[in-house]
Length: 445
Image 1: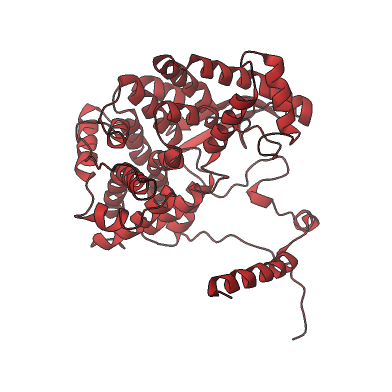
Image 2: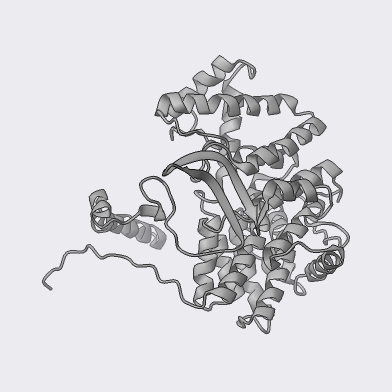
């Protein structure tokens, strides 16, 4: 027997022992009042800290009752609708909001120019890093490739382990600047060595925004339209931060609280985000939509759409999971503010790309799916589309390969992670140590 086969057989056999000895009955969680996934029985998150960076609001209190409302997302005291409306008119919306999240104030024009210049100066990888690190180990999993690159960057930083504030700010700005390069170059290496396609490595243009540079570095012709850049910039602004209570941001704060360095902290956040329960939702939406296109003959027939969505919930079609992806959210019920905002950009992009029929299909599903879910699941608190429902469609129209969908999320979220790392360093000073209750039985040796 080959060595690898022997190891696999042993691992498979021992997995049975894990199942036997690691399973904890649901009643135990109720007995000890432990909330699985840090969520109570009503889905409300367990409070684990305080933050001044962002806030999510999805309910209001009225006569002692929690009343669902249209979701709200706030960055540093500003409604996300107002920020996107104001800064989507500029080329540097993501950069303006990154400054806001990191430093707590909106920049004036002089501060913004200095910030953009600093990011441009920081968009530079160490000599031969692309060749020696990114190209030497190409992977279809670009998140793993990026995480490896982040950890390797520590070896090139003589002050990698210092956690004083000026040094962490410097490192944060550098990572925000190079994240698009790590993602795009990682994809090109994979596409060349694994898919046997042509490879081109474009250096970022210091005069272009983050969104423009992503599209320019990805494409052989190094061009993008104003609408394309505007749509991607909006996606970055809407994904860069989300209330502080998400898994990868919590991971950032937990690792920061140990005194660990910036590179290890952000690598941990990346490992959290790549999990399909966190960062991969738009991929499932795209797979679902491709399946719907193949199986629904008339995209305008609401009855046919409703019937197929019902069969999807009944686990008869698609992936048999009984889910309509892109519908519903752990926090929002009436509506996701990011989806409300982003839909307008996706609509305009679909018009530029001649994809109106696809957009109409998405709009129909957005209207019909909540009704089908309410009927099938008897959920009446409200189910609405989340931002992932449209983001994959937008990336498809931008010719961004699916391997980069979650890395694009990371390119946006690195600003939020960095802001929370800085806040944790400034304001906490204690290691985060969660408590677990042991329910094991005592045994005689």
